[in-house]
Every structure is written in C-alpha cells, then in structure tokens.
Length: 615
Image (cartoon, rainbow, N blue to C red):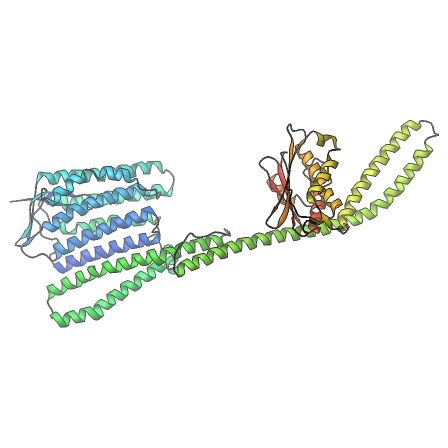
C-alpha cells in the first residue's frame, strides 16, 4: 500500500506519496554528500556576508543560508543516522518550520535585492499572519498521521491540513517570483536586470529540480531522492551568490584581487577553522579512540556531529570578530581610502572605548589637521602666486611709468604752450577745444601712471593708534560727494567697543573708499541699491564687513579678484588696480582681506589683529 508523504524543501515544499529508500545506498556516501552540501552552503553564506555585512542584501542572504544549514543538519541527523525503526516526529516538525522560515527569508531577500533597500517589515508581518495558525497546527500534529521508519522503510502519512500548508508555501513562493519579475521589468538596460534575471533562473531551476526529485518521481513510484533535496537548493544558492557578487564569484580577476588584499575576516576565519579542525583530529579524535575503541557507525556519528557542533562556536567567534574588529577596521579603512582620494577632513563615526576607539579618534584628528594644513598651504600658495604677480606687475609698472611719464610731461608742456599761443590766432576756439581734449587725456594717463607708481612702490604706512570706525565714517563722508553714491542706502552697524589699531588712517580710507565705490559700480542702476557696513571684534581680530546687493562676482573670478589689472567692469571703466592696491595696503598693515558671495551681491571682509588697546 502506498502512503502519502511530504517533503518541505527550501523553494517548493510539496505533498508527496512516499515510502522511500535513499538514492545512495551507502550511509557514508549519503553523509558525505550532505556534508559537502553543508560546507558549500556555509562557505557561500560566509563569503557573501563578510564581503559587506552592512548591506541588507548580504544580511538577508546570510539569513537564508543559516536556515539552509539547519535544514541540512536536520537531514543529516535523520537520513544518515536513523535506526531501522525510528520515529520521525522531530524531523517532520523541523521540516515544516524550517521550510516556512526559508520562504520568509526568501521574501526578505527579494524585498531588498538588488538595490539594498530597507526591508518593508510591515508587508512581511502581514504575510506572516497565516503562520500564526499554521505553526501551532504543526506542533499539534495536524499535518500528518504517521512519520516513522519501519524496518528501514520511511513512511509518512499526511492529513489534509498538510496540503493547506503546502498551498500557503506556494503562495509565498509566487509572491517572491512576482516581486522579482517587477524588478526585472523596471531595471532595463542595467547590470541589476541581469542580476535579477539570474536569481529568477536560480529559483526556477531549484523549483524544477525539487518538483522532479521530490514530487514527480514519487508520483511515478520512485522515492529515492527525498534525502537529497538540500543538494538541489545548493545549486540555487550558488547562483544567488554569483548574482550578489556582481558575477565576480567565479572570476579569475576577482580571485587575484582577493589574494592581493586578503580581508582580515577571511584570515581570522581560516585561522579559527584550521585551528579547530586541527585540534579535533590531533587531540579529540585520539582521545575518543583511546576511550571508546573503534566502531564504524559510532565513529561516523562522532566525526560528523563533532564537526557540526564545532561549527557553532566557530561561527559565533567569527561573527564576534567581524562585529568587534573586522567591521570597525573596514569602516576606518574606507575613510582612509576616502582621504587618499582627496576627501581631506573625512572622519569615521567609529566610537569605542578600546584601542580601535583611540585609533579612530587619532585618525579623525589627523584628518582634520591635514584638511586645515592643506587649506593653509593652498592659501599660502595663492598668496605666493599673488605676490609673484604683484612683483611682476610692480616691475612692469615702474618701467612703464618711467618710460611714459617723461614724454607725457613734455607733451603736456608743449600743449600748454600751444594753448597759450592759440589765444591770438584765427580759429583759436576750435584749436583751444582740441588742445583741452588732449590735455584731459594726458591728465588721465598721468593718473593711471600714478596708480601704477603707488602700486609698484608703496610708501611705508605711518602707523598710529586708530579707531577703525572713524576711518569708515570718514570714507563714507568722502564717498557721499559722488552723485551715484547718494542714490544708495547705506546701513551701518559699528561696534562701539573696538580697540584702537595700529593703522595708517589715510591709507585705510583709500581702501574703504575703493570698496564703497566698487559697491556703487556693482549696484549700478539697480533699484533699492543697498550697502551694508558692519564692524565687530571676534577671535582676537577686529573685522569690518562691506557688503552690497549688486550683481555679484562670478565664482570662477573669485580667486582672481585681487590680481593686478584684472577687472570685472566694462572695458574703459577700470584699470584693475583698485583691489590689488587695497590688498597690498591691508597686507602691509598685517591684516587680511577676503571676498565671499553674499546672498545677493558680494561681501568683502577686512580683518586686523588686535594690536593696540583703547587709550
């Protein structure tokens, strides 16, 4: 009489007709195959998890493989070491529960794969509601009538509730396929589409093999493949790992890269595994031989389950090492690599009260110091470039002024002579106008040359204790004589407790007057033009801010704004020396001048160290 049987495999737990003998007649061969399946599953899970333990995809795959290990151990214990007459209640319960758990692990995996998105736990919890009814039914024995080995013949008589359980598992499997199919359609033209396709193929292949081995063949009266269901699932796990690793799992280049930079977690795990196995075969096995003698069945049981039980503390130890040592070092390494790529100042958020914490704090301090030093070096480099430009421009200005000023003086004298003589000549009005125009242009050239001379050979400042606020107010008073400046709104907020500074008041008036007139030009005909002037004492400096709401300065011109002969004004409206002279004067007083874009317009900041206290 044929009896109903059920095998809850990982991807297709199905109800079957079964009264089975193993396909492999030798228990040793069957155990060897299942142990190979165990170590392959363990290796895949460990490889994928350690590669990126922080990613949801890698974690979900590790969970999936962990449940697979439980499934294989269950099969080894039941199919490899059963007696001629053995009750299979424990095997049946564990098969139902682990098979259901594998389906939920697969749901989680398809939820986060391949984009490493967060798990939508609300959907998983909703899918788990029917399990609240089915799981108690499993423990109560509502799924089967009898599970046993009788005279080495496996017998499983199922009840109708088992088919309901199988239908629910198929529903979960269908949801997983549906999710992957949607992602496959969405990820067109990307590597992710190929990854999703690989996982779909893996699921299909595993389901097909399981259906043939533990469903179709038993219907035809062949039941030998029931103990080997886990081998079909390993094929799917290999393809999953292949897809997760971006198809580099079996790549020669990937293997070479692993050899060049062998991760610390791999080294530790291999050390722990080799040490454990070596200790077992060198110490425990001889002691067991000496204590119990030799019996093939007992030794097989001892070796298999000693190896399996030894894996548990080994895995726990490896996971602790990954969490306590390897993962923090990986985060620190990633931050260090970011710094080498130019992200100076990058910091790790690693916090620990051990040597790793001290190392992380020291690295963060070093990274911050490096960023500050590099910023300072850039500033020094810019200052040196500017100084070289100023020196070159100064030499040029001296030569030009010397070579041009003398001929201009002669021309000016001749024009003045002609202008005096033209008083008695006919058409003198026309000639007088031309001569006055020539004299005006000569005067303009002389003014430019004087600016060049001042820039090339600035006078040493006459430093006196000076109130910076008074310098600014005097500059504003001078600027208000300009017709265009009168149309602007000037808002001042001058701190009343500023210390006196060692300044040359006349030179500083020149600087601030130049900034105010530049602000006027930047605003132009813009309605509601406004200039804001603030002073304050901060961080051992006296700072003055001159901001406008004009058209601003283009970002690409920010670094050139203080270069001589560089101007953003239209041609013929500026020499490009005003800000260069201002920068030179401020630097000569031991201060600094900088420019930054305002919310609207431009803001210049002038800062001097507090050198002289208020008298």
